[in-house]
Image (cartoon, rainbow, N blue to C red):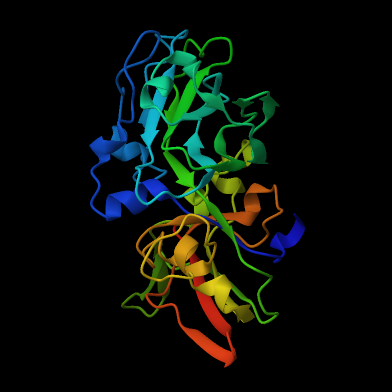
Length: 334
């Protein structure tokens, strides 16, 4: 979308990190799966690093020497609480260069997603958000390196498998590399923010100094958003990128109480969609990053930020019976 216009915001929050932050060990997810026709070890990285919310810290596999094998990630979504999953984001990948594609399936029984191709599991039918390229039946083949996001109908089944495989075969020279995987349920705000949105582009990684002779000089640690939400295509060259980090101050007026708070604040619900349950609680306030877009219909990478809440409290002001106003501060990570 032109000019990074503001419409109805959407948040893509991660469920793996929610569980990790609540004390469930990464080993409980049984991620990289071993078996026939499967690559069984990382060349660089680990299960923890694949979901560490650090897209500039990539994991790699030796796909160039195993071009006909697959990489199967087995995600145990845990039985309690049962939360819906309807999107997957693959950040900072080189799937186009590595001749890779991906399929996703799910099943209540873990063994049905532990074999190559997951033949006994139920397929999903993905919808492209960003850089899903060619979607043929269930198979997604990104057209470009960078970030891929796709959505699908809500899955509440406990086990989900994500299989990376060659487009026919993997490239024989370039190994597959993935910066981070985010999997969860996206949340759309009930309506657009108030017109008084404040958007800022910050250069806050530089330090201005003054020499003994009185002349100013500056040191720049980094120029900003080169790695925020990894950019697809040729514009990933550093000098072609806009610098600075983007931030939003958003206010929302006249939100229904049901849009903000769960019906029962003592129990996490699977069907009760609201800001506290699906956004604020899932990120533990400012603790965990997420993917943010100011326009939930956009298919342009430039409208998406890898961001974090820049606030530790979510304040709700009642302006009428069961009607509230609230504000949010969103800031790009890099």
